[in-house]
Image 1 (tube, rainbow, N blue to C red):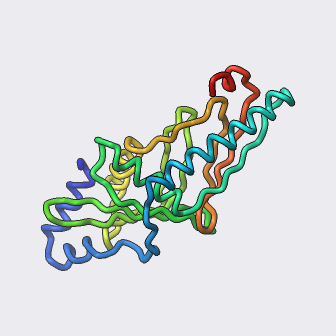
Image 2: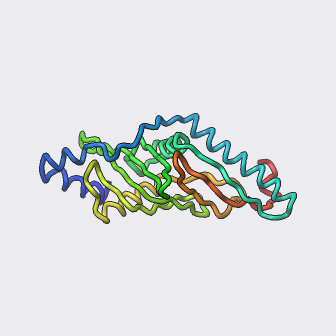
Length: 199
């Protein structure tokens, strides 16, 4: 796992106490059981809302604002399905929580040499025009041990390479804002007739 694995190995070989701390739960987040059905339904709902907004945009000949609320279950299910489908990360079993403090809180597991490491991260997410997710972490740790900046960079790179979102045609100015118990996805639907044909 690159730099992140090197840091974890160093922590584990320093002593049993650090190894114990590294394998402890990283945060007391309530469990959120992922569901492949919830992930599919969330994606379908987002596309349906965008489709309706795009029709309005065509009629009005002006961009139409879009807003979709996503629950923690939907966020967790979407994140977990992306990680499961990725060949570029060993992270799995994600839990994602939106908070009222402006940050997402996540816990993901990583198996290394018989150990299950619990990786906690808190930060914000931005969505690129190509659907790529970009993470700005304010805190990250393995178990109860804080991660140094080099390992945080490696964690961000690994997660970003494994997570993208499918964008509806004509979507622009996407933003994902955490709220208590989930997130609000906002965007603009452009009045593109071509995006409605065959959609």
